[in-house]
Length: 310
Image (cartoon, rainbow, N blue to C red; front, side):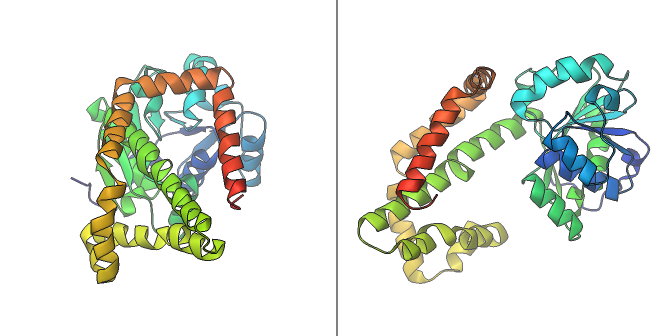
């Protein structure tokens, strides 16, 4: 059940909050919290994040200083950096009974961090830019919320209100469910399957002699329009909103593209996430300097250049 919108943010207003990390997600949280009247301290390392915080009117400090007096410590550094940042700059200075709050549960689920006094999850279902832009426009991004122990759920709901998410909805979940569904969705649909499907469909048209502009519009640009239809109307509503010709093609050809082999690959991807295999692989990759990621990025860049999409 989705919690009712417009939950009061009063609880979080009585607490000192430190946002650790000032990237896309951390920036959105810190700015939204400040605009909601929350006392926010930003802890950021030297570099781009600290400079962003200064530009936004914060007085960022070293992370270990920011967390010393905080009742709630918001961990928004990248997943692969969570453990070293926590072990070296957060844990030793954490105030007794301070609550750790995460925008993504990866570090908790895969035991990179073991919260000493409890943990809260408030995970907006969208990138930081959307979290900030929607807040400024008077809306919000739906967020998943969880708490360990469950007695901390009022804090999760209050925080979700302060960043604007309760304006549209807070969905109760668990740390594990949020992480496993998020990783699976990213890999199979949002960041993996859908972009590559669009890319190869575009390539098929170009290879067959059709113009790049028309191919791009048909296979890439229109994705947003159909995604909006699905988001607002659901799958059946999307099919109702297109021509009968398009619906016939979708229902006869779509299952041939998403074949049994593809479904097995999806199942395998989920198994890797649930078993922790993906997390172990990614943590090892990140800690070795990301050489394979760099090679994959180069391969993807070369492919885009080959197709004129760089």
